[in-house]
Image (cartoon, rainbow, N blue to C red; front, side):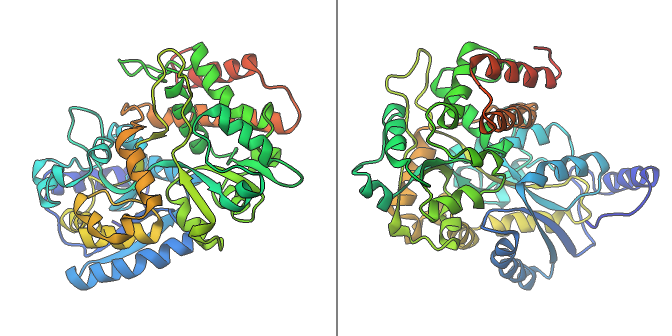
Length: 435
């Protein structure tokens, strides 16, 4: 579907005509060119284009359907998608963060994957269970399918660890902070963070929250950000810069993955808490695989009351189809192509992520010790972010609040429990439910 440069009224009429013509179970037809918004997974937008374009050309050769590709960076992706759902002027096919699945499902703008559509992809059981569980709200047909699997891990710099006399990666947070202090000296820091990224901040709020026994939504899907355990969870992450002083205050301004990952690759930081796609970014930064190790992110020992052994969320990228596409059949054909075993192996190897279908794991590339760590985390100690309509708003409000607190820390202002509690109260108020 091409973006239509028409007035709002005309757009609404055409949208209704399109829906009437295609319907939820509509056919689909005519137009042979698909537009595809891909999320940025590699070291740059151009690097992603170089990975994806040959595969999309292969799709065109097989089907006769052309694909216009646009790779969109994470700072812009959610806003672009929300604008498209509101205007009806979006792509035919697009990638979404899997944590946004229920939020975007609630807009009603995406094609539901009923049993018939899922069967054409090989059936639900072909996908990894945790990845498939993050495709939409429970009890409703999903409006996205898993595309790339991701999980968080602790990346550690082998040379810097050896120079500090540290022989094993930390297993709990006491060991983590102690190692970070030994590794922080001169222009070198124990940890690199992306302090200005609301998504990274929100992911860590969830992980630390789970270990502290704090859920950010209650059983009815209502936000609950302001409990003492929520404050302790967020403060623990901020304290790596504020009181532990193992993260460089300049990291408060980091807003792209290349910045902290670049510091790690250059030996300016010794640890990263990052998703598995850091592998491709480290390679692009010139760091060889044998120069770093990967271990599970530490877990509190002992866990606080109610705490859970969670050290990642079920991370990943899903693929969706806009309901008003003019080429429904072609869009579904592209989803089938990108989730095929062969393309899963090609794309996930290139992007440093994990296949989401079981039959792709026969490739030896997914049998390495590093990949095994992420697979084990995803299967055993990753928790799903709540599949509720307000989830994406949780990421923007809490993550942005943490961004502002990092900025205060970097400027020398005190950030204690009172400041964290105030920021979380403000975030909850911004959800529209009162503080």
